Length: 228
Image (cartoon, rainbow, N blue to C red; front, side, top):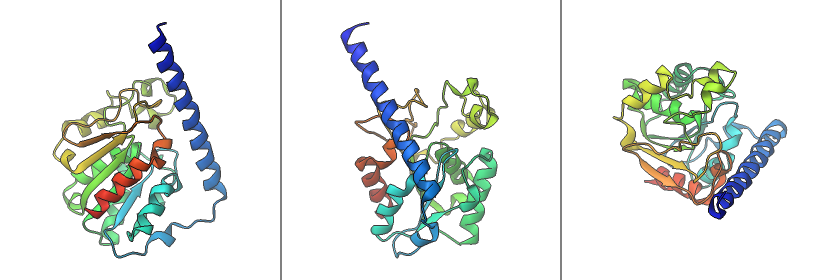
């Protein structure tokens, strides 16, 4: 192994370790937190709706949620998603129903991982799509993950590039120009990366799948899109 190759492997291993430290921290914090999503609904700015990734609650996005709320944006959480284990289309319907029930327009979606796929599906629908102005998707598996086919759960194998649902989502690029995809230089869950054709792609100088949610560039990008 060359010196540069060894250095890259060590760097990736460090990011992988830090990523899971972050994930465990927020899982534990969510379990014991008394935070209520309704406390973020106030504000006169543009409405923001957050969609977490699979096995995540909305609290994984709290660093960004709190920054948005401090900037005057009402932040909406679809609590019926719970930890977002439902199939992609079902999750998108829950989000679309929430947008309709609360009569939200000109909404910015902020999503993580699978949430980015859910958000894009919502944007592609004639009714709910008209209510969404744009989306910032963090570490979203738009192109799938080569690891997905080996995972035991059907909900995780759906992230394979060969999955019909994901393939159909990729074929339609009509809303990609309204998407900003934010991702690190290394993602232990999505080695293919999260670059999306036709979207604004923002690559961070750090790595990870979870900890990139709290990266200052991620937060500033979200704030800029919400304020635009």
